Image 1 (tube, rainbow, N blue to C red):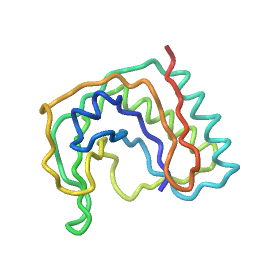
Image 2: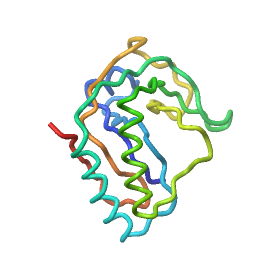
Image 3: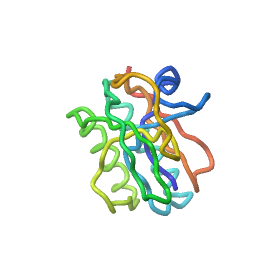
Image 4: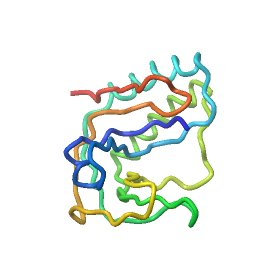
Length: 151
């Protein structure tokens, strides 16, 4: 499933995830079906949303398990902040402008999925990192798009 998220820097990923080389992200929104034309429009709008946002800091804290007993996911929760909510609002506005539907099955709980099973997660209880890149990825998106936040 396609998603829009925030890239977790590789040095932070190494602290949070027990699997070497993992590329982690903080999910902002899961997308529904997206056409090639919509993908093009979304790329342009997300580029603008990222370009009008200064980098900010978030913190990965408590460990939790999401999903079903048959398909659990170990995650690090990320407390909501005004900067994170504002940034996500810009992303949702961009998607709405392009006519993109997104999953609203559950209330948004900022998190970083660390494992596709209930693996004991290593690392510190809490680790902060600077949000510097927005990403658009996942099926059916063929290319992994990255958008730098304003410097």
